[in-house]
Length: 116
Length: 142
Image (cartoon, rainbow over the protein chains, first blue to last red):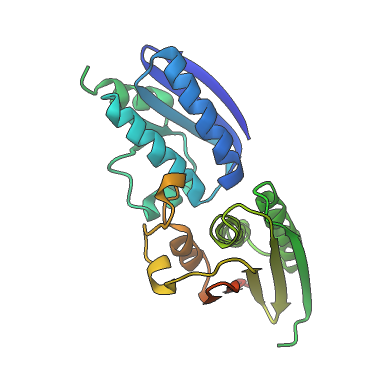
């Protein structure tokens, strides 16, 4: 798994390439939380266009980050996820908390629409 | 059961071997001309079962995970087993969103995913002896 971080205002954008499982989630969690704290951000967008595999560990990691952004008064969104990744999210019935967008721009519009 | 082909491996209950289990399963499967979606379904189910063995069976301590793949007459048979602590209440463990380890950010969706992507999922578990998950899926023939 490869992670690339970028920032836009108070939103951390995490581009994930490769496989998301229990093993790689440990890395994802640590690096994401560290990057969010360092930038003083409150929103997270997961760019998942390059995710070739994801199991339920991915749901756990995203829900964990959702809880963190909630505490900060921020929002979380998924962008560019393929059908398979969206299917995994749908199974957990989490779309209302973690909405999925076709691209980063629409995800940004959503997360930045949250209360200041 | 007699299988036309099969393999059985044991590997250390380490999280980096979750990918290894998926790769071995996919390589075995590829001999039987599965669709891309069938490969992903089976890989995802194996990943869930192996992760359960590592996190819940052995609680991330040392142990061996057993992976079996069998093929017979258009059907794939999978077994994932550990000799760890066993599941206290299998019915509860299989409920969607139930997790005994929320502190590890587990989603509680492992069994639901196995049941969604495989035709049959059977669980045998004994406290203090371990858990064995049996899964089956018929491959589509074109």
